[in-house]
Image (cartoon, rainbow, N blue to C red; front, side, top):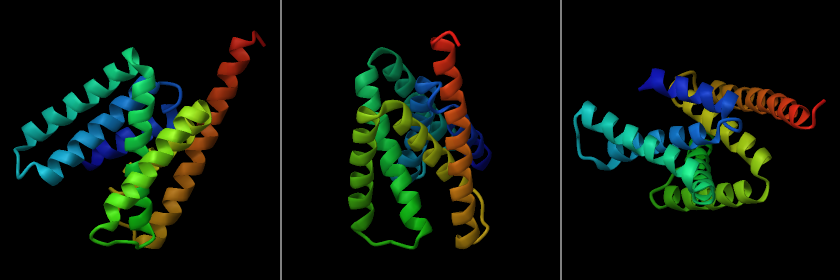
Length: 173
């Protein structure tokens, strides 16, 4: 799964805002995979991948046909997932703490996507992409935290350039 995480992470870093449906599909795939791994009770790899693919496809279809619901759901899942990775990077852990952190991060992610869609999507997809990549490498906490920050910055810069190009093209300049 580490190669898949890196691939999905790179897609989210580069194209999370530009291809919203792909962002939601990737988040659905990762959430489906992680859920089955955690709660699935030792399912075969094929079943895990099929459920993750179904979750990703459902997310992408939701994004295409029900964008408002998809925005809230993707923001919640991405915000919650990213908050879990960040708290692990800084060493905060506890038995009940993960659900609280996930919920708070999820609510913040959903609200951000609704209020400032383009910029929030750039931030959340950059954070999610960086999280996926960093969780697959083993460099030690300090190097992983530095890599996370660098990847987030690269994702934000790259997607901001794409956003400005899109807006210039829309205005005919």
